[in-house]
Length: 169
Image 1 (tube, helix red, strand yellow):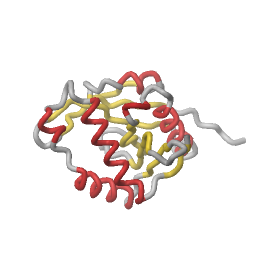
Image 2 (cartoon, rainbow, N blue to C red; image 1 turned 30 degrees about the vertical axis):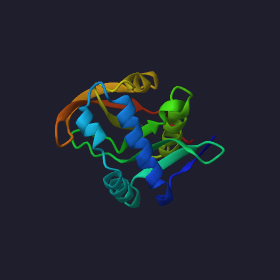
Image 3 (cartoon, one colour; image 1 turned 180 degrees about the horizontal axis):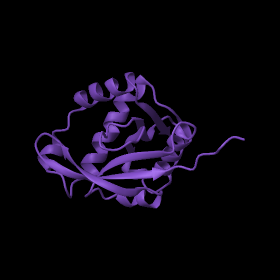
Image 4 (cartoon, helix red, strand yellow; image 1 turned 90 degrees about the horizontal axis):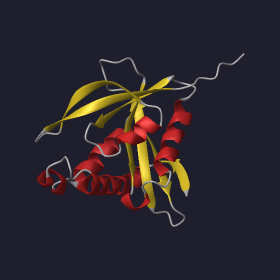
């Protein structure tokens, strides 16, 4: 496995993995009509915009350069909380979930921000079957928000992780 910073060339595969993950992992709480109509071109435009602005992406590939997972973070969009950085996305290919790729991605982001910030915040669908990932990795629920997906709304739990900051002497 190889982890590296994401580039604009990664965007199509990132978006395919995101759509595939939603369609395979969120069927218990999202309408099938919504999941089946996820649009690759719209996702590509969205993530291209994010990457060209201030979002930082990391990707994990296997030895054949096949994308196994990705994560992104950047400036917090949560106006009601005073966090500098927000974990925007973290997705792992369904076939390789549970093999430590998500933890590798999270740790890479935490390492990337450790000198800049003492905490990281994330919004997670409350029905997300992988919410335990955040809890196991030290995130604590600090609030809730309504996530508007256009055709419907879901409740998102807001979770934060306090980072240990090394003080220089």
